[in-house]
Image 1 (tube, rainbow, N blue to C red):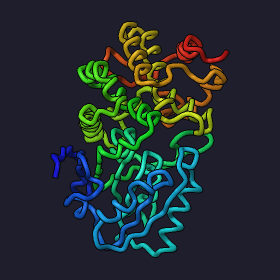
Image 2: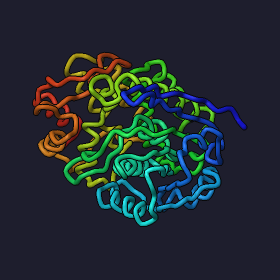
Image 3: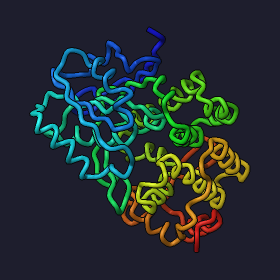
Length: 368
């Protein structure tokens, strides 16, 4: 078997050690000995979508071994990430009489991972689940850390729970079938890690972007590993986002506003986050915490990844601010934003004047 890289997410807790591994390697979707240990009983329920299932469902079922395996295939897309789809998962679990000993497997991108994890958190007050992410964005971000949720028309990921997986199985080979637009969207989250915590990685991304966009396996493996190491470290330090973990939301408050405005249909999550990072960097410059040259490096790297750098033309400043006010990161009426104090250093601010945010949006091209 080819070399497999293991990264552990170290978590304690009152119920004992809840740490779990992230396995990264080639061909893992066909099985790994550790996968068998993650499955807690004889029942397995795999959730996938119409795009991924024809490619990888049979192989994943085989990898789960000689067990009772049921499946549910969902429609693809962020627009289906809502309570109605969650109910379909719960209905199927009940109809097929899965017990508390079942293990759910999320086979797909971030939408499948979030909804399967949330269903696992809810079903019979919590059952085991495993992440098998098939998009770059899910591999480097959403599959790690136990955040599970569905969207609401008024806000992104507003209904959810923290529920950690038993393990994350990242097969780098599946990226071969990933459309270029989805690959670029995943690179937005990769760029984020360089912005908030790893300036050397950011510089590597500047040099390596052509190889990443070309699907170079070695470059993608480096990007995935470096991203997962950063995410695992931050989650281990602050599992439930009471402090440090909030920096992982760099660009997301702006990005979620774009997604809400567009109804989760026309923009991919990574595309919205890409614009959000450019806006957050511009805001940092206005606050005097980031040099304008570094903000330009961020904008240029986002553009080099083939990602948008400006918000939708029909999203006005006031509407933008209204959507941001519904964000999960609003506490006691104060909007918490992630700003940069230099490339590679992110901090949480809840004292940014509304006028400064409005000026940043206006300068970026948001409609009056």
